[in-house]
Image (cartoon, rainbow, N blue to C red; front, side, top):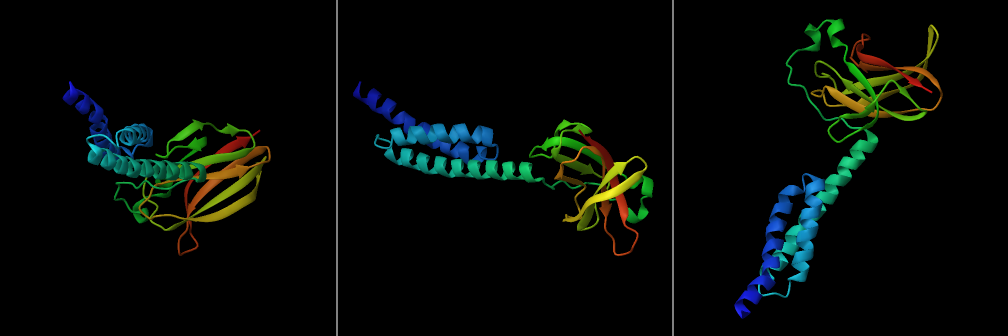
Length: 212
């Protein structure tokens, strides 16, 4: 009976050690890594004075490392989601010099938020005044390290520039997402342009959104 009690008493240390090892991998997915490392950490702390003290302490250390990785990964993901992100590249090998202008026009998506994988959340063309996310997807890679985003206010048949800014990108990307702030009601046009050394900048895509 004594041996059975000692084995049961130290089993938590073994579980903590195993969860610590799993946590070193699971931190990549915060929603999985967090509970695994937290449970392992609690078990390790409870069993740190057991017969398997060494495993318990090792489990605590591994779980702490995994938990830190989970927190850091989740924080980076939240930051990207709040500030816009650029990360995807295209597998196409086509060159901008050989693509006609009509084929360069990309897809423009307006939404309330962008998740960590650049998937739009609550896509629409009409929003309340405030922050709106714009996602650009071009059929070929940008082939440049700098693109220009211009915001126009449309008033009937006339357009007036509201804002324009350059963004640094990787030339191998073909997807770009960024938050913009539109505070006045009306209809806006967002234009993504590839900046070139010549005066002939290339329109990569444009879209219209209404602010109510």
